[in-house]
Each structure stands twice: as C-alpha cells, then as structure tokens.
Image (cartoon, rainbow, N blue to C red; front, side, top):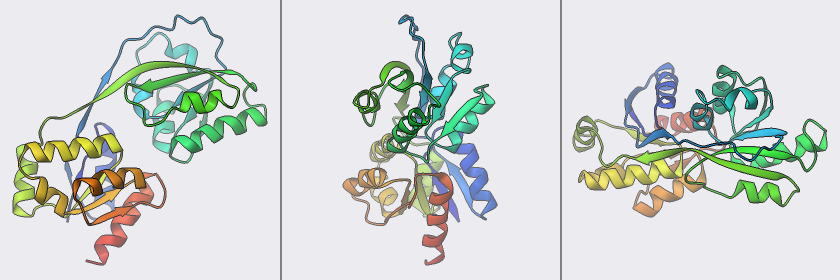
Length: 246
C-alpha cells in the first residue's frame, strides 16, 4: 500500500522510514516549505527558558549567534520530534510535552511550580510566522513575560508534483497523512489547483488531531480518521487499524 505524506521536509523522511517499518510504501509530497527569517534579540532580556513549538524553530536558529545562549536554558519542546531535533542541535536541558501547545503551556507552568524555572520568569518564544494559538498570551495570563521572535515561516506549495497527481488519477495512493492544519489546507489548495481535488479527498485521510481533521472535512473529505494522541506513533497506529479493516 502506498501512503502519501504531506509533512514538510526533512521530517517527512522520518515518517517514510516509520511507514516502511510497518510494511507501507511512502510517497512524499510536502505541502509546506520551510524558510528561516532574520530576527534580532535586541530586548536585552535575561531569559529563564525557551519555548519550542516546532522542530523548525530549532532549525531556524541552528546557525544563529543567538543559539549558544539559548542552548544553555531550559527548553520546552512541544513533542518528542522537536526534543530530538533540539538535542541534536546542542540544547542540553529539554522538557518535553506530549504533542500540543496546551500541554506545552502546562509543562511550563508545572516547571515553575517545582522551581525548575523562575516563577513569573521571562521566556523566549521562537515562533513561526503563522500561529495556531496565542501561547504567549496564555502564559502571560499565568504571570510569565514572553518575548516572541518570529524565526521562520512555512510557505504553501502552489501545486502537487506530477507523479502525485498521476497517482491520484490512477488509484496509486491508498491514504493521506496530515500533520498540521496549515499543511492540510495547503494540500487541499494544491490538489484543487491540479484538478485532482475530488480524487484526493475521496481517499482515507489520517489526521494528527481533530483540528487538522476539520480542515479536510470542511473541504469535502468523508473518510477522515483522527489520531487519539498528537504524535506520529499514535497516528500510524490509527492508520494501521483503519487499513486493516479495508
């Protein structure tokens, strides 16, 4: 069975390996492209921790002079993949949440409660250009000062590769994996632009969260399954269960 992965590079390669280990073939079609954005830490703040809501936040500062300073701080990673990328980049003190921004917020609050970081401390938030929620405001309501640096953006692709549209037309894809609302929206837009929206959305859509599932449902997909937890392993387990019933 061939599964289409819409996840951006380079994380899509990891997903392809995980699919191969389960006996699937992967077709890579990233619908978002990473681009680091220049920023300057001109606030002069003494940070008590750094917030990482995506592995791309780490990649955005990998060659930045700011990284050496941040790598010494407690780093709050949204999930295991982000934590792994941060660890490889030299971050030494990583607190890992369980896959979404709400859990990440709670991890920050809990760390302050047990004095891992300073209560009402100052946090550096390495954010993307398009935010799904106002995490800085949520932490601000809990007494933290959050300084947000827009460090990267994810640019939607305008079209799908020819081999992908051909696969849709010939029934060469069994299901589609979606890892974020933005990548799912980009997938729908690119499929529409390529004239394969109907065949693309007729496939089984496996989504990492309810919010992601809503994007493809609103676009017309009717066979949508949502992972019980916002991580890759749970999503692939859901895929396994769904396809074994076919």
